[in-house]
Length: 384
Image (tube, rainbow, N blue to C red; front, top):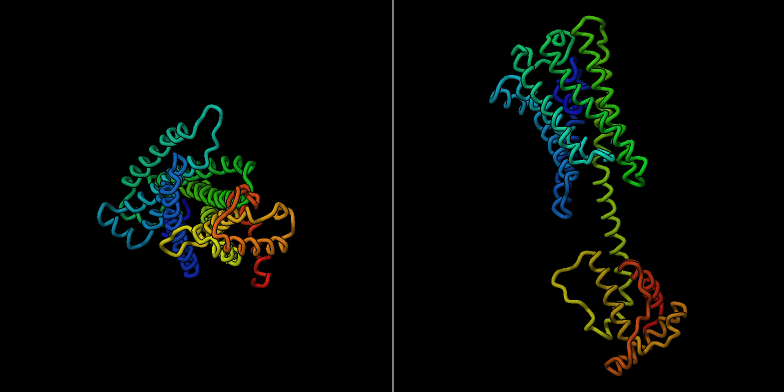
């Protein structure tokens, strides 16, 4: 994948100071985002479990994260010194290939005759062929050329050219397969998922263009049929744009989920506070409805607890509330509730049959809506 290939210099020949800085920043940000995405995926699997698609996505993110780690200069030198010259480059492209294979499985759009499981088995064949090809061709490349950047000179070596063509060819195949599947999913998606898939597809398209440019450059340089040295620079630009779009797309669901969680917590904290006047009024009269708690609950839990406790208390107070309570406005309800609390406090217990005085909603947050209106009315009343 040209993402890390740009960062470690495998992609391009000449490196200017500005280019190195840009590539280094992109590489560092990408590594952090992939690591965060990996942690998020593992947490999602822990909470919800996961089938083949979840495992494939986790594998893809893990492989791409490791590829960024392997692309670091110190790590590359350590791997080459421990194994053999060029081992880091083989491992780098192998991890990219595994990551792309995982993405193919993740984004595969099931058809009538092919399931995701079957597609995963099919994808193992080109992946294994590519991995074997990378290993074999690297061993044939002269030692002094194995760590050199791609250039017209290195591309004239047959083994070096084959290595690059195998790596770029498999990545191109994988990117195209992912783009085709994502296009189908886009027709069915909406909301934040549509945004995420659009960014992912845009990133993969740019990455596909960059690998195709690399293939064309290698073919032209190795055969001598044509010279297009500008393809390296153009491919680098496409690669960086593709990486950025891909990273934003793959992290968008995580960022969206985090944003939704933060905004929900704020909203629940505000609503729990707004329920305070009503909650204090009814639980002051009927404290036994208050659920036990050890620690300070989170805003969402606090809101849900107060809704349950208020509804329970209103049910206990229902014998002291006339049928008009269900049809009058909130200000009148507040007056009637104050009176019911006073009567209950004097009597010390409920009388007669209880009933539900506030209609329930589809979920507990819908249950909170009428209670919030009533609580605001209670807060606006003078203390009896």
